[in-house]
Image (tube, rainbow, N blue to C red; front, side):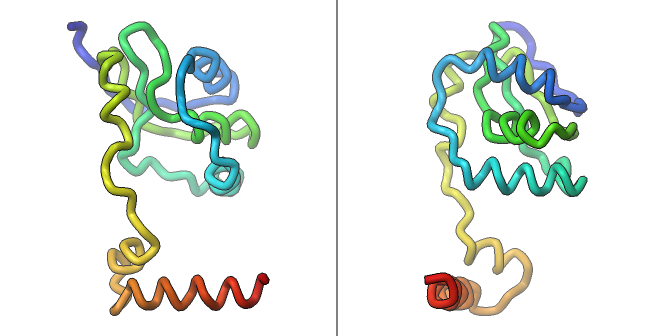
Length: 130
């Protein structure tokens, strides 16, 4: 197996387009995720946070299609960690863990009773926005 290589790179819309063209099988695009990423990229607030763009041994995209789609649509560069030469079979283990809920996010920020606060916020939002 080739050695994986990891580094922080600046991704431009042209690079994102190229990598997205090598995205043979992936989940459907979630427009809400792309919109959120675009907003942060345009505001210059899309921070390097440890999440990676993953390319397999053949240069195919395994992880990062939402971030790359946002980069193209926002016409904005962003910095991120890129991992290359990942075995293609690793596709089946990416994003298979538990996703952080809004309650989890609030708890990490020190909000007491975070799950109840999150639920209440969702109810209030729904009431205000129909």
